[in-house]
Image 1 (cartoon, rainbow, N blue to C red):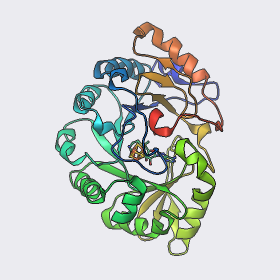
Image 2: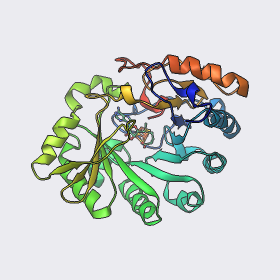
Image 3: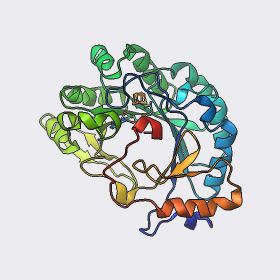
Length: 317
Ligand code: SAM
Ligand code: SF4
């Protein structure tokens, strides 16, 4: 731990080392479980600028943040995306990652190759173009698939996030396991979370990680891989060679090992995805950061908060 790392440890011994930055809430897809058909987005003038983001992250990294992931909304919709990545690449972080739907990814890949951003988590909920369109409400499957395979060939660390919903894409679980082995790309199956637009349809669509695994065990054997203590995913090597993981946010929340802080598009730091309280860091002087962080970390819950009125795309998934 760095000399300043103690600012990042809470009373339960959890050390905050990861920062998830939501660059904006707007998106070019309309995934059924995430967005309403006509969402209202934060105006661009209210987004933290590239300069604000550098001010905030450099101060947080000085206090012990080791890994940064950019998310949204769709982060590649920010026109200053490359500027942001170039600046963040100068920070002494262990990992810089991006969570994206990959619709706009392909043209960025050659630029990103020369930055610290090498970890790409790409959302892909179907291997079938028609089902992809049903889930995302956009006809973009081949663009996304091409970008995924190109990123892999170019040497990026690519992982797929698949939100599994009963009666929507659960029948594709075996196809994803075969695809993972064929392309040597890990796939993580996410339980759909009871947040935002999902609240009204959660009961009918939820499938637990336990049930997903039970469905796959009919055809495959699993051996457990070693995960870090703050990993949100329980990862396995499958008998066909695939690497898959399960993120059981609802049935087995990972709050006790959580090491994550969140930054909203407006530059507010929040202790938890499920909390609306936070502190605006944009105008804070460096000497005020330790106290602001201590306040935020003290607010971090140890168990899952049942209610979050804000949808995921506004906070940063
Ligand atoms: N647009 C980017 C993308 O889709 O990868 C980044 C933002 S998105 C909010 C981040 C992640 O949150 C995606 O993997 C998405 O599938 C997941 N997500 C959104 N709503 C969810 C929900 N209700 N339950 C589970 N995961 C959800
Ligand atoms: Fe957009 Fe990502 Fe939400 Fe889908 S999951 S609507 S791609 S923000």
